[in-house]
Image (cartoon, rainbow, N blue to C red; front, side, top):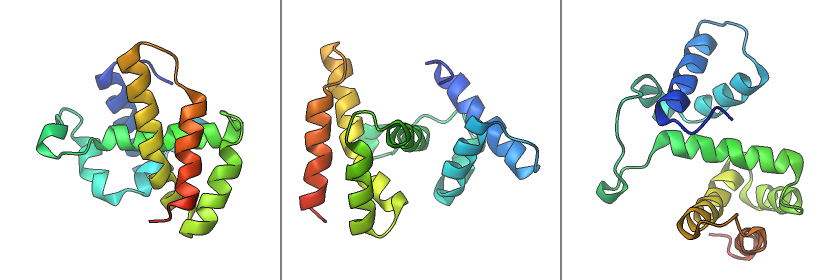
Length: 141
């Protein structure tokens, strides 16, 4: 999307949010980012504090990671890659009552697939990822 440099990624969020607040024209990608930021008012302060570290061992969620996972899920749904994710999402959104709530459920599966891929230095296991997502349909917590 914009590289792997943490500071560049966070700067993109900050600049996009600034442009959105100033009612400037946004690119298609910036529009997607702005929507995700809007949907997370609890993260608005962090978008402007891009230097802050978030330590999972202290129970701190990384808002940039969370919002990035939303963007990743949305891209997967739009392209239906892996094959079948769009159908799973539509069913889950119906069960959950909103697309955003469905994405929140799906984020754990995506994060696990990414972590496993990185830990094993292998491409993501799409079959295992889809199994995790499919399980969300029967486990409606």
